[in-house]
Amino acid sequence: MAELPVVLLPVGVDDDALDACLAALDRATPAGTRAWLTDDAQAGPRGLAIIERWLADTPLQADYTRRDRRVGEVAHLDEALRACGDADVVVLAADAIPLPGWLTALSACAAGDASIGTATPWCNAGEAAAWPRCGDIAPVPGAHDGADPRRLAHAAAAMPPVHPEIPAAVDHAVFLRGSARGKAGGLDASSYASWYAALIDLSLRLSGLGWRNALCATAFVARGGEGGPKEGDLEALATRWPTWHARLATFLMEDPLRETRNLLSLQLAGQEGPRPQQELFPPRDEDAPGRKAGAG
Image 1: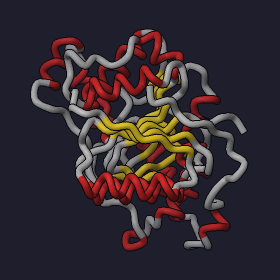
Image 2 (image 1 turned 120 degrees about the vertical axis):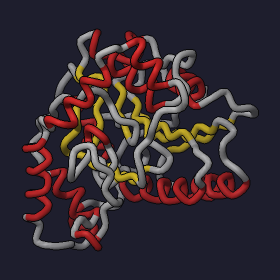
Image 3 (image 1 turned 180 degrees about the horizontal axis):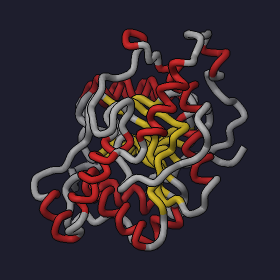
């Protein structure tokens, strides 16, 4: 098996969301995967206790670093990405719920197409990558709505490995190719206050260099709600990329991924019902190689 990307998780202030994210990460990710929790002085006492407990028990090869003083989410994340050098990285939101197979699918997506600079999985709150409806925010998938996470992950894994382009990567979870990230010059912390906006800017710069921003149609990462810009970010995007907002609006209205989205719904509907988890996805891949991510 090829080495999986580093999972980079910027810690937030929502302790319950972080706890749920880390539990899902353990369930859905091969053992030995490199994971780095990077904390811009965000976690409080309860959050620190959750992280300490997780570090003691996780099957992942995990590191945790914390700044003494906050520098802002974009500057902090750019610092972490630079510390990863030219390694491929998946940035995972601290309130995301990755479904089984997510990281392997993202890695395979990027490995299958050298033109992919970023790859974004499906999400119930994923803007251009949203499912079941483009641009909508749906509840976190669950057995109550017929979208049991295990069945949904199995349905995504059964999708054809054809990964269409989206306007920009979305911040619930995103694969960033190390070589592409280096050529694009990293994140612009001087212009943007949110990771949401800085990721759009990075995606558009990558696109200008010839890289694709792809939907990974074989992976799903759930989230309680969408990310969003901070004050001044939309204006900064409009100044640098005057056609961006119209391009995104056109994409959401025309929904060129409608057939792909409907195919995932059909795959899910075709499932015979929940099966034992171990039959669909082994809980851990003990053979997955890994080494600890450098904290920089």
